[in-house]
Length: 179
Image 1: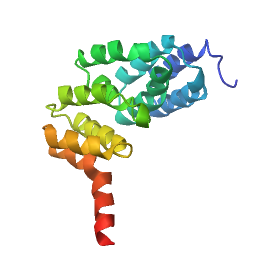
Image 2: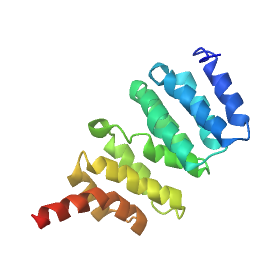
Image 3: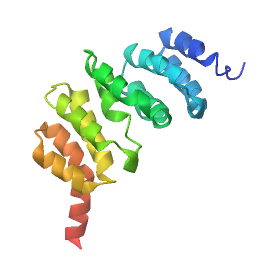
């Protein structure tokens, strides 16, 4: 009983992930969270497995932003090849991961990569992709509002992506004009 060892964690997570009850995937994510600061590059395969097996926004988003984001922060050499590989696959959850793994990076965000990824996916009609584009931009607007405003003005985004991207900036603008 208790937590598995770090070496047993991937096997335990996969076993839980394969069970039919959704709560088992949540339990697997709780286990992964306990090891978040000890992830190694070998865990990327596990995260990708979880994202594409029984995918849904809640599990995919947490894995992208918390687990893959942390892994890439410590292993930046994995970023480019992983994002290119994900964008080359026909899987919206991997595409969404390529947009969201930097959510918590703030000033460490690779804006060139973020911009290129958004431009690559901007024409997608899928709700989850359009929402993720807006979310990634909205989060980064808290760090660099000018960059986000310029990006939104100079790139064709869906109305949903644009609305989500500008949500925080619009709120700040309205607060300033009310005073």
